[in-house]
Length: 129
Image (cartoon, rainbow, N blue to C red; front, side, top):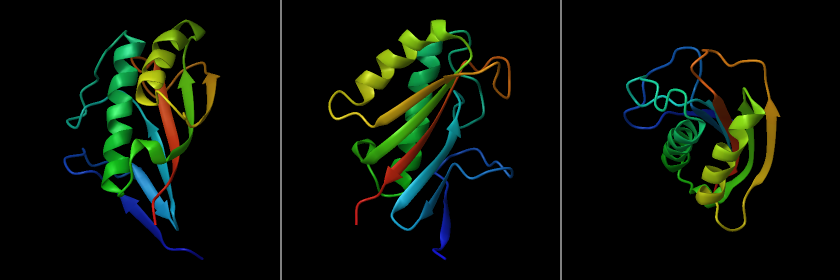
């Protein structure tokens, strides 16, 4: 069985419940990220586009800490609490990957872990050899 290695970016707020990312073989599994900064403060309350920008920064921190780049992201899954938030999320996703975007799924959900979170994104990354 491949070794499982947690990835915690420098300056990330500790969370005893989960690892921000886990490497297994050449794959990095990035936990679902919400719009909190490194101190745990919610960024962009009420603004799905601003939340998505913070989420992508959080994901990038995990990918970088694992030795990858955002271009290595193979698949993302987005959870949004209202379909009306999709355009803001989609805009930031397109800015993050202007060419050769990863495979992507978006799921509308009844809610996330806290009501102020409008968007959550998880990722699967194939790390360079």
